[in-house]
Image 1: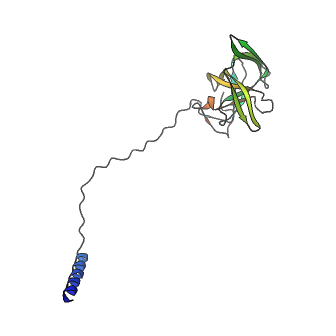
Image 2 (image 1 turned 60 degrees about the vertical axis):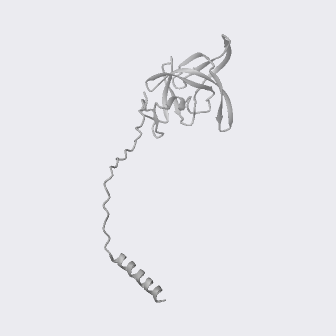
Image 3 (image 1 turned 180 degrees about the vertical axis):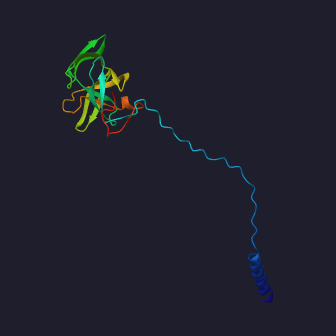
Length: 181
C-alpha cells in the first residue's frame, strides 16, 4: 500500500510541477498568405440605362410612337392590332393586320409571315396568339423583335414590351415613365 501511495504522491507532484512551469510560446514560422481576391461581378452595361414602366416604341415605318407598358414578367412583347386576316404565301402562313396609333390616329397596314403560334398565359386562362417579327425603334435603337398579335382594347396601353426586348438593353425602375425619346 505504501508503494501505491508513493506512486500516487509522485504522480501528483509531477503534475503540479508541470502545471507550475511557465508556458513558453512556440515560434511558428511565417507562412506566405495570398490575399483573398474577391471577384466583384461588374454590372453589365445596359445601352438604354434605366427605363420606366411606360415607354414609347415606334413600329417602323410608322412616324409616331406607341406608349407601351414595360413588363418584366412577360417573356414576349405584344401589340394591339385590328382587321387580322390570315392567308398563305409561298406555302407559308401569313397574317395581315392594321396598326392604329390611338393617340395620333396614324394607321399602317402590315403583312407579316407568322413565325409561330404561342400559348400566352393570362389570369383568366391561356390564349393562342400568332407571333410575328416587327421592325421597331426603342430608345433610339432600331431592331427586329418578336411580338404577339393581340386584342389589347381592354388595356391602357396598346403595346407591351417584354423581356425579349429589354434583357441586356435596360434596367427597369417602375417609379419612372417616358425616359426614352
